[in-house]
Every structure is written in structure tokens, then in C-alpha cells.
View 1: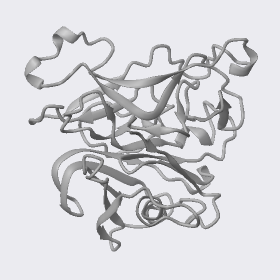
View 2: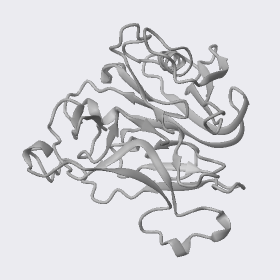
View 3: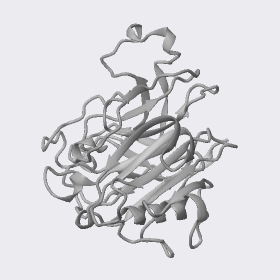
Amino acid sequence: MGLPVTVYRSTDVGAPVGTAANPLDWITILKKCLVDGYGSKLSLGWTLEFENLATYAAVFRNNPVVGSGGYFQIASSNSSNGLNVAIDLSVAKGMTGVNAYVDKILQRRLSLYNDRTNGWVVLGTSRGFWMLQNSSQDTWSTTTGYSISCWSVFVGDIETFDPNDTSPFTLVHAVTGAADSTSATYQDNLGSSSEVVAVMYPAAGGSGRYEHRVNMGVFTAGSSDPNPNGIFATNLPMVFMPAILCRGTATVPVSSIPISDNLPYYRGIIPALVLPSIQGGRGLTGFEYTFDSVLYRVVQGYRTNALWLKMEGEWYA
């Protein structure tokens, strides 16, 4: 049985924060969305495990009854709460306190710009969620302007193909490699990079962290647009395909992956993330559209759009 998705927006009645301009804003948002709820909306059912507001850090855990019980930390990159201070997102199998990791998976740094955001969106379940930074730029994609610094990040369990997967918990971003990131640039954001990446431990247990990626197929760079009039100018139906995480990249053959890694080639699906059958429309405005009575949201960024998020339905079906 799947888990129904809840969507939280900065425009909701009772929303805790309007513009998320500093680390404490995002900590407050996630405490309300993941743990406490607000207004008429219940929380996603995560728990707040640890907190140190002196350094602007908080640690959350997904529901171990239905999920993996993975840990997620959000923290100021420099222990301050000034405007435009970056945030560090870290995930691990376990934690004993702030910055105290057991089998850490990775860290990713994200920029916050007070003049480049227009609210926020969080959507998810008790096992995983997306956090989105809204842009002040109205168009889907641009080579300059505000959209290039906006980000979309998934934290939690993937929809693994292995029912006995011991390590489905991860963070989905666009930075390649398993090393922690200590910089925050727009090229590393989903929609601005040509990659979708998740670092994970082996499904069957054991040491070692391995990069998994989504085979993006055609992903147009820069201002080149294969369909400048947009997806609505065609007579073709829009079909969305799940974003499947593969071990390595599309150029890495299955035979080159050591069996001793205990890693399947196809690991699982990233909840909500889908690839469209029609790409294009850099200059289109409005981020959310309904296809076949289901609401989807464009993943905004530097490159011509090739990623969407399904905003309704169930995950982990």
C-alpha cells in the first residue's frame, strides 16, 4: 500500500515562513512540515532527533516503522544565520547528535539568496520528501537571471526494486562523486546540471558508498531549445517516465560493475521525479500544470527543461 503525498507551500494559510532567506528559515519550515504540521495540514510524520540552534542545525529521522529510519541534518554552512548564508544537507544511516554520524552517506551544500527566491514548496511522505526553492524568475529555464540559482532536492528512501534493500535512504541532487560538497553553484542543481545523482550504500549491506545516476537521454544544454514554442504547441501526448537510478552512468556497462559490490544495476525509482516525452519551452511561464488530471511541476533551472515532479498520488506503492 502506497503513502499519500502532502504538499506544503509558503502561500498556505498558517505557513511558518514566507521567503526562506537564511538557515533558520529552512529549519523552521522543515520542523513544521516534517514534525509539527501547521494550519489544517498534518506533518509528514518524521521526528526531530537533535537540534542546536546556537549553530543553526537540526537533525530529522524518517519513520522507522514504514521506512528505513534514515537521518537527515540541515545546518548553516558557517554556524551563522545571516542572509544568503548557504545550508549544508547531510544524510546518514544513523546519528548520535548534531554532526555525529554513523555511516554517513554524503553532504551537499545549497545556496540561499534573499533576492532570488519567491517562497518554497515541500512535498512528501513519512519516508521521503522534496524541498524546493521557488524562483522569482517566471520562466522555466534561462541562461541568466534568477532561476539558475534555485534548487530542488529529495531526501529519504527511494522506491527500491529490492524489498530487502538495507540502504534505500539517500539525498538526490546533481553533484557527481561521493565526496561531500563544500561549495554551492547553480551548475550543481537539478535542472541546471546534466546529471541526477544519488550516493548509496550497497542494497545487501556492507561498506562502501556508490554513485547512482539517472540516464537522462537527451538533455539540451544552455539556450538551445528543441521545441521553443513549448510542449503545448505539439499534437503529441505528454507521457512521463519514472526516473530510475542506475549503478554508475549510462556509459558504464553492467559487466564492469563488480558482483562483490552487492549492487543491482537498476536500484530503484526516485519518488515523484519523472522525465517527459516532450522537452522544450524554455520561455514558458508558470511552474505547475495538469496532465491527465494529475498535477505536475517543472524542475526549473539553467538547462532546457527535462525534469518534472508529480505532485499528487502515492509513493512507495
